[in-house]
Length: 266
Image 1 (tube, helix red, strand yellow):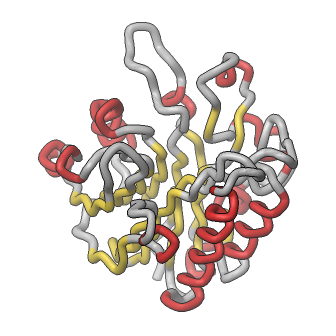
Image 2 (spheres, helix red, strand yellow; image 1 turned 45 degrees about the vertical axis):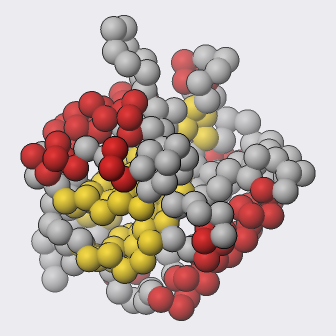
């Protein structure tokens, strides 16, 4: 079984890339973040023609998440409490292909000195509470998304402790989510600090030739519960999707993160 998470940074701009990604990888489940358009804009007919059902939680112009699956999913929840007052679409929880699948688009926070910083930490705390109240760590569950946190210094080219991606309080809040009963699928394959980490960042800024210099960060994650731990077979980043090629449209600033699970046993 193949599961992918990808912040596509606008469904309007990346519509053709989405369909090509489905054809190239043929994932069983695809978690999407930052649709940046209302649900009516999502290419449901094209996605259905490719063999996928789509569950969407969207809003106009900003945020937005979706889960695409070959088997029709059952929605458990759209949105978390911190989003309700802001009208933001950042969370989706479904059951699909025998799994509980959650996708999250965690607020960036803008700056540790900005009022939105508290919102980012509150959001991660709400996610941890949701897992504790609504989910079971002994059941097969995958949590994927753009978390806007690089968990360790080796997960960012510039591990600035005063920045939004590497700040100690953001890392602590993400650790609180993971502590519920999750494993970072990436770390099940790659030990922390391995040289290969630098080839497996998932986000690079558009400025200062960041992708060419590989000045990125690993902020997109796929987490699994204990029943899936031993079934992780491969984790990879589709860096080619992030590469700007002559004559092609601009890619997302994120690359898809791909997880292969062995579901042949049990």
